[in-house]
Figure 1 (cartoon, helix red, strand yellow):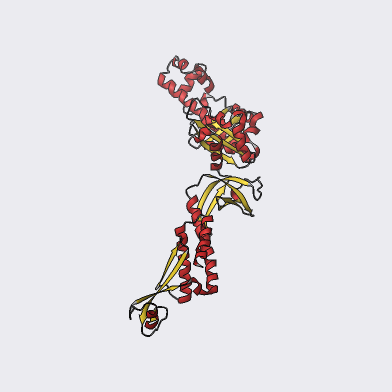
Figure 2 (tube, rainbow, N blue to C red):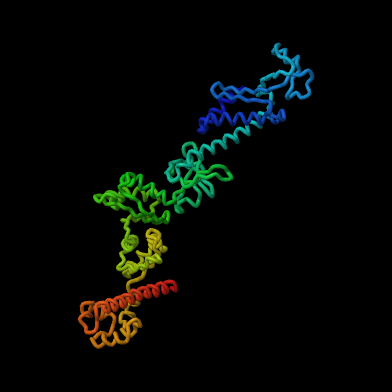
Length: 428
């Protein structure tokens, strides 16, 4: 009977990848619980589980007495010497107990407890195996589809793909093979749980590593990823080897590499761009397929205005604003797209800035400039410092200060224009 018990449990352990020593501990605890229920104590009992021979041995230690008061801890001298004649009063007597002595009811209860312990051990194995694999792609078969999650069988384990981690326009079928990235491994009230995802940005990165050897080898780096899973994504890449075109390598010959990734993501459109440390350059690239004619940035506030030709404004914004939002996420700048015609209308109102309207210029300086034939800031800036230095009464420092004042006014004017356009866009 012992052999059958251990063999059955050993087979379960092998199938579920549970350590033999851990299993021996589970069996020992199960029999200790049986002893506790039958005898009320485990203090004078020892259990030995031999996973190799398939033996479970239970030893009960009793003290030899003339008259038994507690049959759990004591044995009469006559019974003891009948087995071992050399024993005397006060000696310790070891009695071997068969598992069958516990009765059918307790054995049935023990089996239920054993199954529960094995499930717990299985979950612990799951946790230990997967806790260091976060960010790794797994391949498994869909075992069950529930309302809130899809359960996937992976390497004899079961992992969860929650609804929040599913691509919204995908449909899953029981038995089909699926790929996902391990997002989290945590201990919950239900025990250790492995959460996988198809919407996480790391899933897209891992797919690029699989399809583009240069990324896996570190020749090309993925600097930043932004996604609307199932709809659109933008990926900024950088080549550590000047001889290799990062975007071309990711796209592949005739687009074969990028198409494999697009297919895996249910036709999610993917824009691959070259990364840059220059904000203006990366913003310009991130708004692809639109091509801004001008970028006005505020590096301190991390905001930018992209002036787009009227015929490309819809491309810059994208369906539901996705292109602009992804560009903002990719660059770290809050980007506002503006039609070129609207921007020109706003600029025209401020292009003729009269010198008298600039309080930082003294009346004397304005008078001298007016006498020299200059009336607006544009005329001064067009003439340049060399022309002003030739005027009577203007030294190099004075000329430099005048030009700095006028330039600052135009920069402020550009910011004001941007603010006006932004306000108008919000009102609309």
